[in-house]
Image (cartoon, rainbow over all chains, first blue to last red; front, side, top):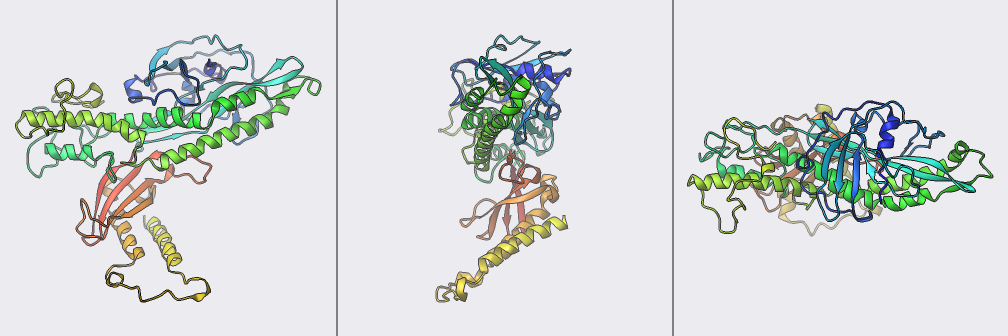
Length: 369
Length: 132
């Protein structure tokens, strides 16, 4: 069972948080989450977004945290919660589900907070930036741990694994009633798709440009794409590549267990503060092995993340674009401009793209967002 | 922009120098294996430099600045393809510099690429897409 200790970190941060920017729906987090990651126990898993972390990493480097690659500061966690307000975004991976269920709520007391020797789930969320291209970069993980009384010994006890990062999502141009490019397809009468030979808005040109997204040298655009596809792509990097692949690849469960088993005798250390100072180098060294392993895995995954390379990000974006392509083809077929190829099966609802695909929405309305 | 282009060219020149260095002991490579292609096709360095220059001159297609990007991959399209008139075509990938780690222990940023297909013979560089 996971010890969802993220709120403890939030409370210690001593700040009042807002969820205005990071409020997301399940769809916005991107389709699919990659399932239950290997190396992490199956069953209900709760990720509590530490929104304070979302403020440009403002909470990194707190004096009671072990920053990856740095020495552990000799301080004990305060037992006092402080005067704080918390708002949490939770993403729950239920058993057998590949998609997180998200929800917003107030402060939820953690029933496991006082129970030692339980593995903690990663908590936290990336900071989402508008603009600056489309990218995803996880930051180095941060460990929270404390010292507990274990009979004749003092023992290290992991209380949180905090994750953070930066996601950039740049809006793709979306002019639903304008025959211009770059654009987001809006295949309706009065929209932005035509049958004019040589036009960048020709229905086949739009299909071809979106269809090459996950092929060598393809990628987004240059003329047709959607913000929804970019969003799905970046969240797939976070949810599937980072949380579901790299964290387990770093073997967090074993790391947590190893740290929780570190002890020093009370005979050598009169109080918890002294014990923490003695334990800190070992804790930091073990945690840094985990961080290094996560980094190796992440870099290996991302170095091969190119269009046509089989990456999860491009697969997620393709799912969104497939809906838009289907919408354009259905429109072109309906207008008598195109014949549906025999190998292309109609969409389950007769050709209307899935809601997340963002089209068609009619003149004057946005698509894909 | 000029400074960055120069640094790219220097790097490519260094690659060429390494590739063209004499073999240990001063041995001379056999000459009997030369083909017509050796005379008619520009060297890799000169062709690639020209391709990179063409692409960098066309960063405007992506509303991007060459200062913010670095070349991370080059592939010669020997069998031609879209936007290619011959065999002197290159598929070039530039990546946002801020996403490229400065050490092997740092994390690579996913995305931020610009994909160009460059036809050196035609002197054309086409932005074919953006990486995410």
